[in-house]
Length: 216
Image (cartoon, rainbow, N blue to C red; front, side):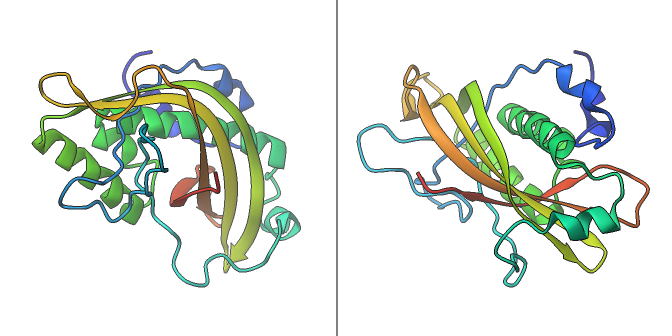
């Protein structure tokens, strides 16, 4: 896998063949318990083993209108939209984004996520570097990806996906000591991500515009 070939294939609704492209995911994450506190980090669960979490960025008030998938409206606005193909791309995008975040690769993240989401990610990356920390994540299994909501906001389509994954996450200090997570414990994580695309745009790519932790 050379370069950043994936930058132009995120969520290509019509090209499912790219999903066969294999990933090596190494996710760097923080809970945000250090000072200054990360405003986007989800709280760690109770217990001795803390799950290292992606920074989150919720959508603005009113962005999550409608209580169920409204995919008909999206299909009317975008005749190429197919839920199953979209979900295949969403699963692939999830791995691409967490992989780029793990490496602290801000250039790779930039075209994949909205500006405010990128700000949350890069803030965590900067604090991790300043603290001399390194992070590791092994995505053991992406168990499911399901569409929870689909809405049209003007001509922009927004689709919310619930991801359930199993992973091993750990953050180490400059001396290699574990400061967060666990190097061998597999934990289930649930993430709710919202992707958006301007249906007037010929570019078929979707961007990540909102993230939040799901119910455990």
